[in-house]
Length: 152
Image (tube, rainbow, N blue to C red; front, side, top):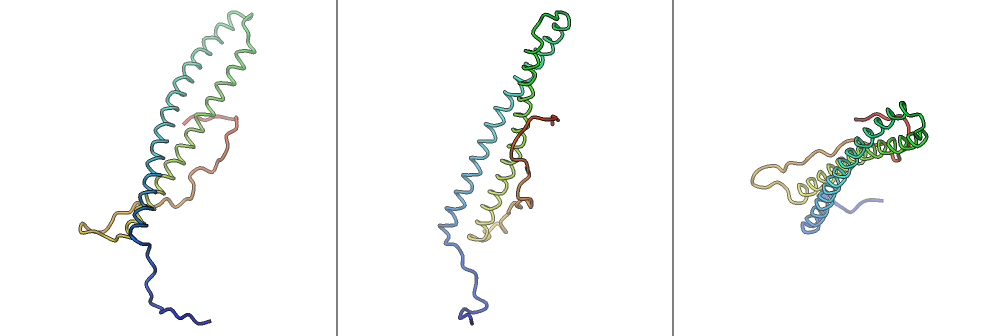
């Protein structure tokens, strides 16, 4: 079947208003991710503070247990399991933070590319477009399980 379109036909462009609206939506989503990142960071700082306070108290309790064997050692071990859970939560925060940052870069890059393609360069010169990360996802893990733990 033969095409009736000219070979040198320019590619169709998105209408300028539609492109501007999509760009705005991408930037709003990016700003929402930035706010989420700050909230997650605040929660993580609180979690870390509580973790270190609990760990200090547990160390003191373990010292007392050595001096007073009648203390509830199984209770201390259960408490240590909770501290291990807090460490897992801190690792989750780190993974989530990496994913939020990566997604924010992708959204801003898409918004910049869209603006450049739809609106072209301005009188100040070519539009600056942030490169979109090549890897589709910096975090390959999609669930957290207890196990060996390495902090930062």
